[in-house]
Image (cartoon, rainbow, N blue to C red; front, side, top):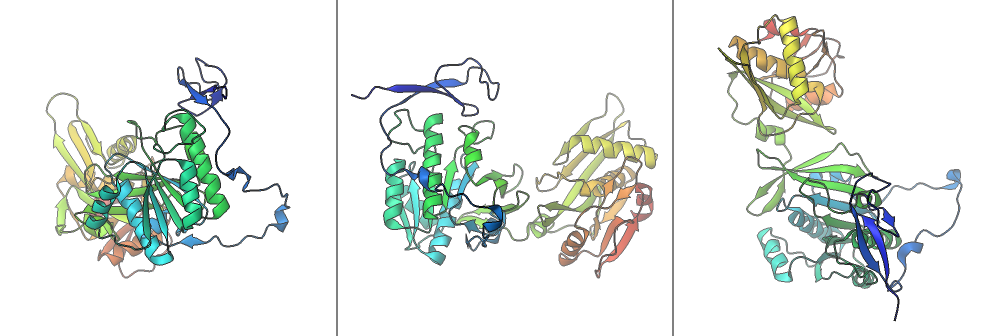
Length: 448
């Protein structure tokens, strides 16, 4: 009988040790090591030899355009960097109920219709449950094959037999390697199962999408090493105050991590939103007090958003400063610039600011619009909803140019806006819109 061997893994970073440690020497966390049992030789083929030992000179390596599988959904293809690269391993995480399995099943269906057999492996749901979701989302591809299996060796054996063009694993926390005696979902099982799938993907050229659970902190469950091992890490998130679902890449070896895909949940499944700006700005009044339209960038995509501000006099106590969707420190900085440059007395006013639709603004190109909304509310001066504000504010009140100005202005023109307020130092932009250039925030008095 084989002698059982034990090893200790850190539940925070995935580091291993032959004995228990009170403090992890790798990540510095305390009491994170847990014991796991290992026994027996590895069963099934060894996928670790996929790379070989050939040594190549950098100049002799012939770079070819990587082959990609197009899903047919522009929002997904954009986040993946133009499509799913063959032989890649992608990790898809998100909160419970956000729609990870629904999104993965939709991707599998579209790839199956376009390229051939797709293998969807589930370790959490029965075939009947998956069929119910497929019927609700109008998924009926004959090339989409389902299997209920949790043994990673058996999964790769099935993949070798079926030869799919794409494989989906739902989820990584439910699969296990037979030669590891610890339970599925433990640090050792997750690491070794992911490594086995990675080697299988590289060797066969079949891209694999694995779904991962998240912790209460919103991070993907398991060791952080899991995210280092895969080629791409995607988070599927639900906006708190709106119906949007956002697919965001935090790691992508084959594309940019600045791109996002925007979706909405409907009765028939998840649908892509090709024009979120139009949806967010529908039914705006001609003029509004305390509102301004800004253009921000999510990756290379310009989004038009409505910034709302409310100024209310406070007769006693400390004034409140409450913001939603805007960086709080940037908001306080904008208030200080307005007080200094426009001589506004905001010290006895409550100031509230919000981004309509629940979208979060993380760039500085919305500074001028935030300042315009606050000034409009404080002075009770309406702002035309046909005007877009683009610009960053410096500490002395100067309006500074931002990147991709032409793309921002073009998106505003496409949605029917008539005037655009941009920094005076910006280059000339070709557009049919009226362009108003401003060099200092003091000029808001003449614009609004």
